[in-house]
Image (cartoon, rainbow, N blue to C red; front, side):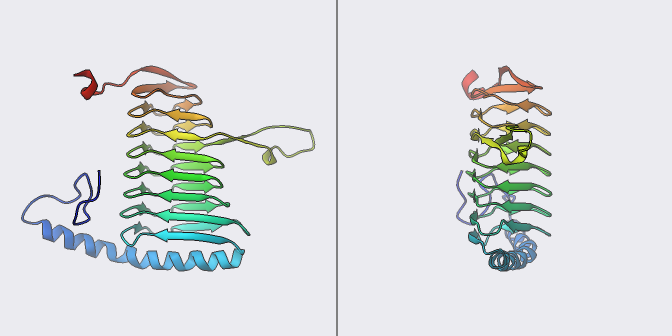
Length: 240
C-alpha cells in the first residue's frame, strides 16, 4: 500500500480515464488554500512555542492538507514532537493539545473535522488511517493505530484513569496509564469508548456504542457495555 509514482492515493484517488490530467489539475487547484494554511500554521506553532517557552520538532509534509481553524496548543516549558506525513489531512477545527508528547502520523492519515487530540505520551498512526469527525484521543502513555486501522464518529480513546488516594488530594493528580493498540485494518465503530491496557487485534471490529475495556483477538467482533467478544469476523481469504 504505497504511494503511486504520480503521488495519487494507493487505493486510487483519481479515475483512470482520458480525463486523468483534468483531475490532477483540479486537485492541485483545490490544494492551493491548504498550502497557504500550512505555512500559516507552521508560523503560528513556532510563535506559540516561543511564547510558551516550549520546544517542538514540527514537520508537516508539503502534500498534507490543512483545513480551516486547525489549532495546536503547547503546554509551557515542554518538549514536543508533531510529524504529519505525506498526503495526510488535518481537517477543519481539529484541536491538538501537546503536553510534552509526540504525535507521529505516517502517510495518508485522515483526521477529520472537530477531532481533539490531547497528548503527553506517544500517539502513532502507521498510515492510511481514517478518523471520522469528533474523535477524541487522550494519550498519556501510548496509543498506536496500525496501518489501515480506522475509527468511527465521536469515539473516545483514553489510555489513563484517575483514582482517589486521600480525602484532601485532588483525584485529577493521580493517574494510572496503560498502552492501547488498534490492529492492522481493524475497524472501531461510532461512539465507542476504549480504555487503557486494551489491544484490538488485526482485522477485528468493535461495534458502535461499545465500552471496550479488554482485548479483542484478531479477526473477531466485540460488542456491548462492557464489550464482549461475540463471534469471529468473516474473512473471505481465511474462509476459503
